Length: 330
Picture 1 (tube, one colour):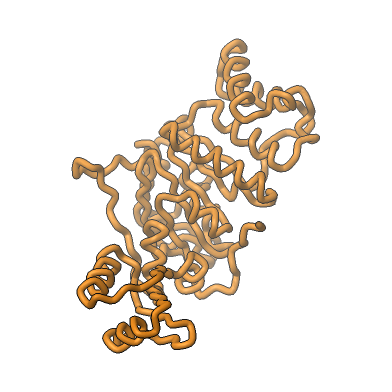
Picture 2 (cartoon, helix red, strand yellow):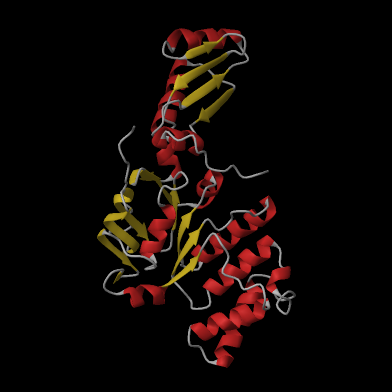
């Protein structure tokens, strides 16, 4: 298994970005089952972080510890500058949490759900109504606001759930599998909402079973396996950990193909398709080297394509799991 990759996030001026969430040596066991075995995390403010892992890997446990719902057995964690163990109230005042199971009360209307949440945040009635109205409009729920939430579609309930989470103006949001059970259109709509949150400066900690979702949304991804972080980095960095990446050169001129094949001894030939497959990690430096070589040799390829492993390959290689995360239905 490749060693964990944990590139440091830096600002353009060379300084480290402030961490919205950080954890060192976080541990949690239930009986003789170790769920988290000393994990380290650092999530820059204003970014989307995705935690991937097989079912039962400890993703929800990590969210519960960081959101102060349960205590860790060991290690330290800070959220929004507050220690989760010594300042849980400070953490709770800065975060919002949306679990994989909706917190929406189906017996009351969408608006009543929002006003109840405002009351829990000790807002005045006028302030609660103002915030509720703004969020219902933002999440396109105005027309349904007076209807019982039990009549909402799955996508509407998810939107209401996140709207309720935002009532207190949290700067850090934990989304524990927020699109589980949604149809493709609702899932893509939810992605748009998550991107909007981050554009407003909110930090999002996302757990998901959908590899495509992590690839689409996350600035950084960590793969959790056997209680440890197996690897961490951007989607592209993780994909480069796995062998099998290559550059494919295709030719229409048989003479150019033969010349290139004769010179590139390490390339895999496909004489029928007039194509060459060159092992590559897909970095800009390697691509520039191949293009420079073609120019120097006076050989022109008609097509150059870069093939890198996808997150499915990364997941299987790092976890050795047959418990494949869900593919988004297209």
